[in-house]
Image (cartoon, rainbow, N blue to C red; front, side, top):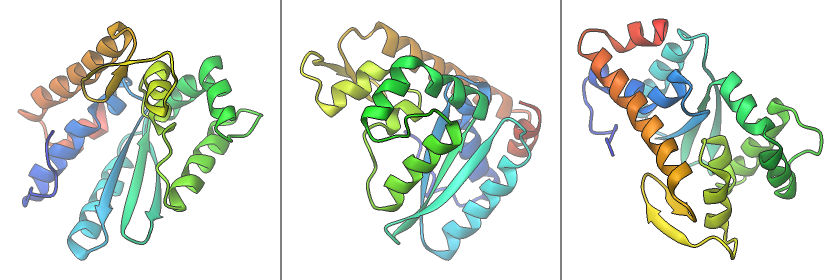
Length: 192
């Protein structure tokens, strides 16, 4: 995995960022979450990211403090996230995890933010990040789902759906990586 905090150059850092969120930009993934230590260097990077996100009409973000140790940024594609969360199996699962009975993407995001602001990264975040529900349920400990492998995340049961999802994420990253050869990160955010 690419490490962002060693990037000293702003353009290099923003290139890393655009590659990281490539699956969200292209619609292959509903959301991504980033964490920034609470120091001046990372506050400046966070400000740069928020400015860049505003260049892209497909993206939204929610920012929150996590245990006063860091700032987290949930970056999402509202259309893809809404489509993901509206899946009846996902809604049923999330309601079981304490989410509102009446579906609203904003209400579900608010509940997720509430849990994380209280120092918990809930296992169901995997649904928001686009991981197959079977893998989220397996991670939580569903008895009928056995760990098959680790490929970007823990895969449980039949790996075919997970492999396709992982490949979609990787293809999006590779596509953006190729675009970065001839385009600035800001240009990519403005046109993708």
